[in-house]
Amino acid sequence: MNSPFALIAALLMTAITGLCAQSPNVLFILCDDLRPDALGCFGSRHVRTPHIDALARRGVRFANGFCTTSLCSPSRASILTGVYAHRHGVRDNFTELPSSLPHWPGRLKDHGYSVGYIGKWHMGENNDTPRPGFDWFVTHKGQGKYFDTEWNVNGLRHETPKGYYTHVVTDYALDWLKQRSKGKPWALCIGHKAPHSFYLPEPKYSNAFARIQVSYPQSAFQLDDKPQWIRERLDTWHGIYGPLFEWRKKFPDPRPEAVSDFANMVRAYWGTVLSVDDSVGRVSEFLKQSGQLENTIVVFMGDNGLLEGEHGMVDKRTMHEPSIRIPIIASGPGLPRGRTIKAQVLAMDIAPSILELCGASPLPAAQGRSWVKLSSGRDPGWRKAWFYEYNYEKQFPYTPNIRGLRTDDWKLVRYPHGDGSPDRHPPEMYHLKSDPGERRNLAGSGRHSTVRQSLESQLARLLAAEGLTPDRDRMPLDEGVKRELPDAKIR
Image 1 (spheres, rainbow, N blue to C red):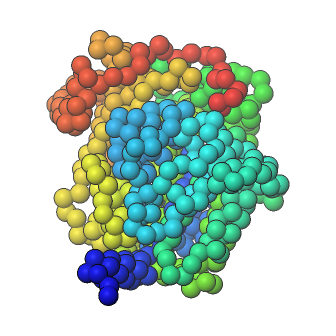
Image 2 (image 1 turned 180 degrees about the horizontal axis):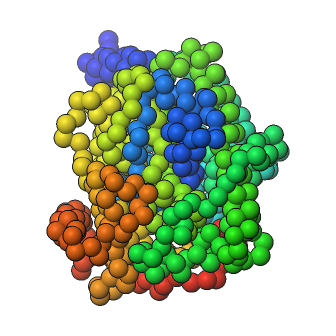
């Protein structure tokens, strides 16, 4: 005769099986260094992305998405764990995500999901082994290459399939999806290399934008009221007169005609995005043909923004708008269709949002907030302000320590020295409503001194709530902008 415990266990298993059968699938697509304005649905004048645009029409487009640290590994860690960089500890591109930290894919695995990660992981530069919390893990060391990357396939084998990265990662993803059992929900993360430098489109898109005229942004030459470090950055690895990720061979080159190198770089960047759109189309078509699209939550986003000449800069890391803005699109069960949300949404909101949509238990101590109610216009208490953090890197000595505040209308950026002494550089302050391009630094304006004091107090309160008071907010010493190029192995 069956024991009561066996009967209870059987009932629980039946309940879990029933819950899993009803749970939505999750397709999470992450791009690297993707500017929102490189997508059609975010207003690109030149880049056509019909498949990504279709996702936006089927779901929600977050018009004001931001990362809280504009650097690949820290932002990726925040996306997975729902917390700031100072909490998860991944402050640079060389640090592993601590295995003890819970993340949303692992939480879904605990709730009965089959969970896979395929593509660029980029936390732990020289490690391509499978990470905890996944059933299937396919990745590579470091940045990977646009052509012929070597992959570690779930710790079983190393292989180097010939071809363009974006298509290879899509092939791996489709192979995994085709093997899924219909009785169990799945969650798949696809990590694209594109459009990260060094920008290299596949051949069919190498001349897609050859006829498009590209100029330096006007803000590149409006630096008189900016801190000196921004002008010092012009000739460096992260400045518009520098190497431009090897698109310029002789540098620094401030000549007006040298804008041709800059234009070639931007066109190549756009070209890599076209292949990402093709990938989204392939996966979406598979889900549609297999009858899974309507029961699949699709989240498409970038890990951080990118400067393309604004304020004389390339790369990211700074708190200027192109550096911190990220595209976020979400569609599927539990979300409205064809809606645009203007409230400020953060990278660390992804984890709680996906878990709520899937009916899974939340992560402990998550700092992000679920935007499920916000998506339907039912969250009047949504955040109005948040803080930004970035720590000076000796490997890339072109950006200072940063602590800043962004509200719906204003931005204040401070540059701490790192040793508790007064800030190394004067601050920046912008009224984003009237000056979205951040062309007029109002930090020194007497007319706006009251606003500055209010923003400084608000920033101090937000930092203190995290224990980041001046005596406890640890960061490297700012050694200033340097001209040497970074080590070729970490570019």
